[in-house]
Amino acid sequence: MLLRYIARRLVIAIVAIFALATVTFFLMRLVPGDPFAGPRVAPEIRIALREHYGLNLPLIQQYWIYMTNLLRGDLGLSLASRGHPVTDIIAQAAPVSLDLGIRAMILSLTAGLFFGIVAALHRGTALDYLTVILVLIGISIPSFVLAGILQYYFGVYFKILPVARYETFASTIMPAFALSLGTMATIARYMRSSMLEIVHADYIKTAYAKGLTPSQVVWRHQIRNALFPILTILGPAVANVLTGSFVVETVFAIPGLGRYFVTAMQNLDYTLVMGLTIFFGAFLIMMNFLVDVAYGLIDPRIRLS
Image (cartoon, rainbow, N blue to C red):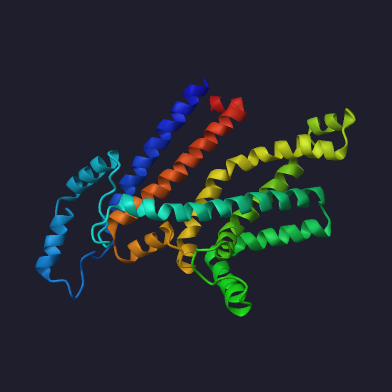
């Protein structure tokens, strides 16, 4: 039963990746403009470049060639980076984005769970109200706005942290915090709601009836069971961190995938935009696949759905 559940989810994930590739391919072809247009580019050179990259072929033939190459792991050549393979660009920039994403997710999980637990255990107090207000602020402020605020006050005004770049530990603090705040607030809200929802559950009352202390009930039963709903938002949380890195990396001049994506959109670099979209999309889909598998392992009832 479990293997059948995993196989079904894996097939759905693979189909979703190819559907994403198809939609991205045709959407990029609908974008107005020419990647080789410019006052300094002669018409004959433009024609030669389009022939070199296969953009003069019929659209269906271009799609067939791209999908065939995709099955072999070939994402094509970048149009704006002098023909560099897209896979090489991703391999060069992905470690930086991954490092930033891991830092942001660790900060989001630890701080989000902590504030959610504290708010639930002190329900109705000033600490609870303060946490709720901070959560609302964290959810409301976009990451790129927070990035600019942090740069001005901590980088320019107080001169505590580096304004940009991604070289030392100090230079990673502001980008990681700007990227993690929204996810941190979401996790805190879900954790608080989950703990308050199960506080009157029958097994909590049974634990008290057996003579367990309040701290034992909280750690052994309440927190452990409250973590279960958090698992469902890990996939979207990772997506929020990754997509938020697009602008944050540009603001802090971080040489990651986000900055390449923004530059590729500005230059109409079809292949690089499609490659990065497929890479991000495949990562998100596989994260959701792992969450589904973990969900099925924890709760056998999920396998029957």
